[in-house]
Amino acid sequence: MLSSELAAHTAAEQLANCQTNNRIDSNFATLNYNLATEACADRAAITTGARDIIDNANNNTRQILDFLVQDRISALTSEN
Image (cartoon, rainbow, N blue to C red):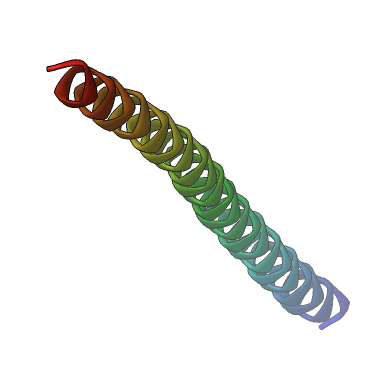
């Protein structure tokens, strides 16, 4: 009787340990997924911000060049 109770208790303890390990593994998997998702979102935000800065710089350069070209055209037209 004592040995069967001990065996039942041991089996219950092993089951509880297995369930705890499964929960821990599941929580680590969820944490890893969340970290990867956040890292991807961070990289996307940085990429978008960098693209916006480059597009703005290109637009500013384009405006300056357009002004200089127009100014030169006006000067040559006045000379003629």
